[in-house]
Length: 335
Image (cartoon, rainbow, N blue to C red):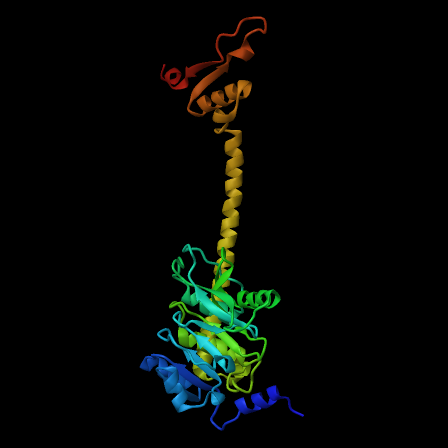
């Protein structure tokens, strides 16, 4: 016997169009549309939620991609996978049933940010996008709130906040809040990705995210499975680019290792030089008493003087009026 939830899921994955079926909401350039048409077999594009609803029922949509200009989103976002690049929308579904995800400005702007550990494809893409990033002043952070007319108890709020933070691509280390995040909802395992900063290469991130979501939703993302990235399934152009990436990564590792070895050698030389200075010239500043006299005598010898330590030549019972007696050896040679 099927439950209501399983019956609903059966309805939502119906239809005959090729999958994944993607709705594009907002203003997209011709170049973007062309790339998305190569990426997905079925696409609908609308400037507003109303236009999308007029073209297709949300029950047939697998994924909605929301571009930066969008302010108002459809009411059915909790029924599909969502990738949002807008910082103007009010909220997106949260990780748990009664939670929502919202963007807020900090009371005090910060230029500080942190990059958490991520899977290699994500971290590689992030490195490429963030190469010239030096501060995040004025960026909004993502936070958990309760849905309208819902009650978010403490335990669920804590759990939702943990999921939000675990999926962080970049986060504020002081507020402990993400600037961008990716997660799957507990209730239905549908994915939510909110990347509201303009620094992200949108089409590239969509490809990475949908490939990852395909691992847990092979029905909606039947064309996005890992075997497409294996060498035996790659077209020649893919093989060529993958090979170049691998070669550059190996070169990067070799360069980092070589630089590390050079730094280690220099650090050893620096330690030896420091110890030598402590035993020699730096003693002019740090030594006292007889040690200072010896060091001053050595300094004069190095610049060509003949030095007599008078304290060592006088008898112990005689009074000592001088420490050193110097003779210019160059004058003696001239005579």
